[in-house]
Image 1: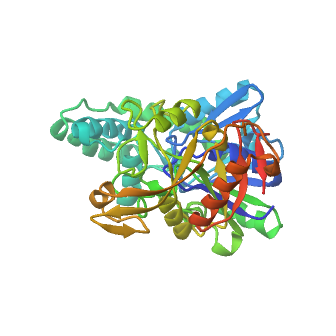
Image 2 (image 1 turned 120 degrees about the vertical axis):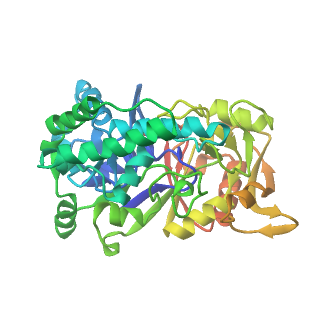
Length: 429
């Protein structure tokens, strides 16, 4: 296996956890490079379901070193809780996981501001997970953030006082919300000091040594390319860069250390939260097309982190082509093909129409994006089950034709196909 970046290339929830878990046995290192506990990577192995927010999906593999890079933001309470859950299941997390000492810490005032902002926006809210991710990245850019290495350094108390003064002013005077008590912040810092500080490491140095030793690295992304703060559907995006290039700065590696970029996408499209979604058929409440509800229900489309219903629609090749281009994707992993089983016809969005003009790529402005109407190609569906198939040659003819066309309009070859939730439900192409 080559050094590979694995990223989602839609709006998240593409099945990255399963794909990374599948590839992990062939990697010596699995490294997370951005995001925080807003990620929800679901692994289903046999009868056991594991949802990971912070910890890389390779943690279940005995000989895989897992790393959390400096590009991530860490909530000590949630990470410690996640570690405890895995350890109770017999997974020796502390033996397999190391964390960059440069990681920014999510603190109670970040979560409080996140919640207050969303509440103030009402119907115009972004749709964040409310876990303080955005404010933490803001602090990082403003140079007032608290890193994991800082929890044991002199001057921390002064920094916290300054940050609390700033945040509590915003909370009480602007948002008319309750202030954050210093004791809750100090408790979070003590948790990080007690449980995480001993697990810190120079992740950049480790990766350099691993590369020099000829080891194989799997770089694990969170969210999806369309949620990238620079290249996604701004402002309805996350607060970090989710494209392949983020692996470099989020872990401190050079481009020469990456061989392949695997783009993971569903055979249809989903989105959680607000923002434009041209191929949307079902928003979790209102039915716009029976096929959308069918896919949502059969695909169990609820956020693994938030539990929110996912908006559901047809595969959007305009979105995928954009993601392929900005991340240099070399191969596609298509998931949840089996969800389309039983539909009489399936559709692929090949372009958009806006004000009488045909668009082959996404607009930069969210208002213009919201006005885009999908241009579909309709293909025959299939009644045969693809669930659990492991041989691409066993696929129904109509499913093969669908994949061939999907590949052509996405400008990227399909190299892997998922036909069910279990690790074993996979076709290598």
